[in-house]
Structure formats: structure tokens, C-alpha cells
Length: 270
Image (cartoon, rainbow, N blue to C red; front, side, top):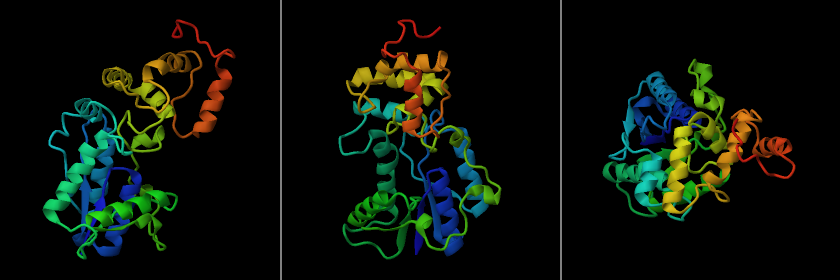
């Protein structure tokens, strides 16, 4: 039996990898990662996933898109002419992760739909609060012919954070709730405010790309329409860019400080 951990470089997938190795032994475990351009995957994420692999005594197995090193998610979306094919998945996720993942499985562990193999299990870092993701993933992978498991919902756990073994999680968690790419296509307004403040280059590229493809990344606004508001929040209100405050509280606090009539000065950056 081989246990293939979907090893994203985030904290949850690292915990899943550690639990899997401790239960089944490292000789039976594969850490499968899809490397992403260093332009949007923070170098500290790359540090983290390598330190966890070294701790486990395993090499990272890469299933990469052929252009991963020089095309980031915005490049991929530009090539596709949009942000989503309309099935709930983003083009960047599909082309940088999903397709390479399926190609790796097909090459190494070919299967038949609805007939799960008995010699491989795919493991994910979903936790007890993500039952909808777990159920969806079970169905998707069963349809493709694979079984799945979820170490973070196991009854008997051995570790809950990587600091217990002396490995500090990626610094991106200081501001973001995740270790996703900077300027995540799936993120909301609060996350894009953080990107606006910390990576204005990514924000500008995304803003221009929205105009080019004629679609917005967010559900209810184009980034160009939010730019003045974000500038006012940063330069006048001095709103700290942070995802750890709940979205409801974050925007409630912001709205209390915005002008009562909702109109910002024409030159909102001083």
C-alpha cells in the first residue's frame, strides 16, 4: 500500500504528512507537491515544506505543470482568457495542480472509474470543520478510481502543530489564514486588500487582467472599482492588512470609519 499525501506546503498538509508517516512508516509514504512560481509562492513556504520533508526523511515528489517556474496563476488565467471555466474551479488551480496531479496518477497508478485501487490511498489535510470538502473529495476521487483518507479527522492524533517538532509554520500565516499564492483567485475582498498593501505589483496585474478578459475576480466588484477605497483605507485610515480578523468585523470596523455618505475624496491618497 502506498499513501500519497497531497503536500501543498501549507500547515494542514504538513500535519497530514507527519501523521501518515507516523502511522504507516516513511517507506510507504509519498509527499506529492505541485511547485508554484516563486513570484507568488512565498520563499518561506518553500522553506517549510522542505524542512518537514527533511524531518520525515523523505524526498518531495513533484508533479509540476511544464511551465510552473515562469508562469504564475495570473499568467495561466491570461492564457485561458478568464479566471474560471464556470465549474467552481479556477483555471490556475486546474492547470497548475489538478491536471498535473491527474497525469501523475495516470502514469504511476492508472485506475478505472468507480473501481478504486487497493494499493494506493490519497491523503488530504482537511479537518473536522471541512466535512463538505471531505465529502466532495471522496466522491471525486472515487469516480476517478481512488480511495482517500483524512489524517486531521483521525480519532487518535499525535501532533497538532509543527512547532511541537521545532518547525515554524510559514510566515505567510502572520497575515493570511492560508499558505496559498499571493493574490489568490479564490480569495475575497479582505485578502485582496492585504495583497494591495503588500504586493501592489500583483494587485496591478490582476486589475489590468480583469479589464483585459472582461471578468472580475471577485463576485461583486472589479479591483479597479475598489482601488480608491483600498488606497483610502491604507493611507488615511491606516487599516492594518490582516486576514485573521473575521470578515464581518474587519468590514464593520472599516465602514464605521468611512465617510457617512460613502463618497471618498477624489484624491483619496495623500
